[in-house]
Image (cartoon, rainbow, N blue to C red; front, side):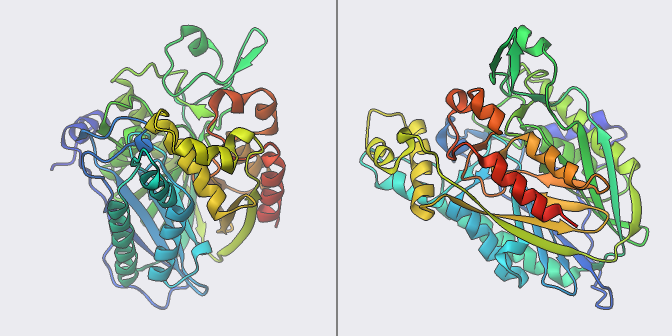
Length: 463
């Protein structure tokens, strides 16, 4: 495959071939270096026929573009750190813990030091192993995932983590760069003449809703990069927006973030690219997306252009220290009777309830069974001095990402959402009052989460 002469030409090749190039160093590790980094990647495309979005959509019928997991291992004076970004919709409860535990063992570290993130594409799998067992054991039966496929991906990721530790490279510098992206993100919340709703979804065809302002978003794409002298080893870019253009038609796809990342793969200089989604529970492309097929390449180009601009704007400085902090957050389960254990158990065995709805029931039961007092969530932060990398749970609202940045106004806080995804949407207090939960439902925690998360972020980001 020849290197394309333009971004548009590259995009055309990627759309046709469904493949991309990546740069991975294979030099021997320099054991005299203070910090050393290795990258890894693997294909995590499910077989055709696998459920998408936990069977909220029809099972997959084809592969539009392959799904990947990309990550890195950072080794130094303390125990290794692992970061992985996966082109799946969500990992919840025991599925999320399975990834952390197995990768921690492979890296020789603790699960808390393994940051597992999903990009949240909807034409992709969705995993909660206990929920799957509950569905299978119910009277009507049903499936939301292939557990054997999930485990195969976990084991191949562990092998990739082990392999990359044999080719670690010294890290001498860290880079930070950012750029604004226009005409991509918009908030779900709209105010129509004093009436607030959250119905500007990822695909929006109402011209009145499209005409309204973007609302609260984070317009900045942020990139952290690691360098060995003047040689770039890795670029991790994060941007907050639900990653859907056209979706729900049965084609497995990583959508526009996947394509944007692959465009950056083939752009000089060769750098290993990782993309992570930010806190975007209430942020979609709805203002700019009516579901037209051309929006996917258009959005990919806008995102790739932002990544390129952030790279161009990168400032480097010596990497002299890395610290790791973790806070445990407990988000109490919903207080609604409709989400109580007794109600959910009854609904799970109701044959008249559609499978897509019973999947939701199984997800709720899975959380209640594994943590009776609420969702137990580790909130990890890697502090590189010049930059901070934070992982928040589930579909956290963008306000949490903006709040994190406010705690370190002189820093460079990069926030990944969609860590442990069991809580579903995590609205702000205001969004609860305005009826978000009643409109969207997919929320397993009770009001007041904002206060708990803000307290956690203050502790993590305090100097």
